Image 1 (cartoon, rainbow, N blue to C red):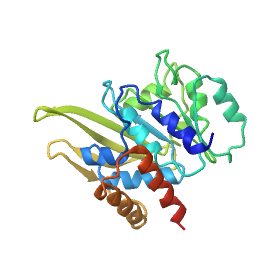
Image 2: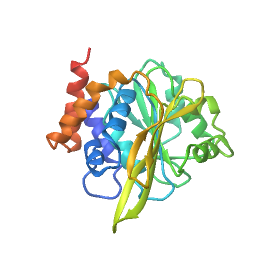
Image 3: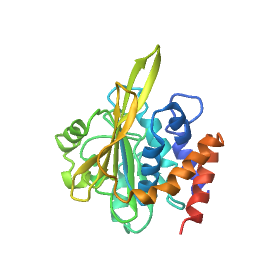
Length: 254
């Protein structure tokens, strides 16, 4: 089985609620994430960023957001769904320059496929490095809550290991005008010093996204903005169609 077919199956297995798996274009159109945030995330994932998404309520969309961001993986990065702890041990023994994205459906104590809890979580985050990355989600609404869960008992993740997670995004869900409104409330990026910096936030009162401070290398984002704007304008939203376009984009980048 080729990498793309394998990865598509792994992403589809994240969809436990039925219906079509949503793409990043669906989330942009729904107002869950802004085009600017999506472009920034695409650049980061393309350059090797790991991903954590969070939200306390079930059904808020943290898994959907994570799945959509996995659609930005560069070519030839296989997804390894961690359904047993031995895969983490094997991964730590592998050459870190061997590309892989280790996917945990949720960092949580449930006994379901792809869930991870206990001391293996700290080992899981130690996978980050070289061309290895991770992607997962958990029940937390803020960076402080996420840090408390991961770095305290019984998980004991080292703060420096958490600091290597490239992107940490939190989803807020509420009812507005009689409907459900899902928004990426905060978007954090690793600074490279063991900490994360807030890059974007959502203003709930105005229902708009704001950039926090000056984005690093902001001029480099334009090709990503144009690419995503083109997908939205052409109404290309099916996950496999979006993925094919992402691969074409990466092939034509210098």
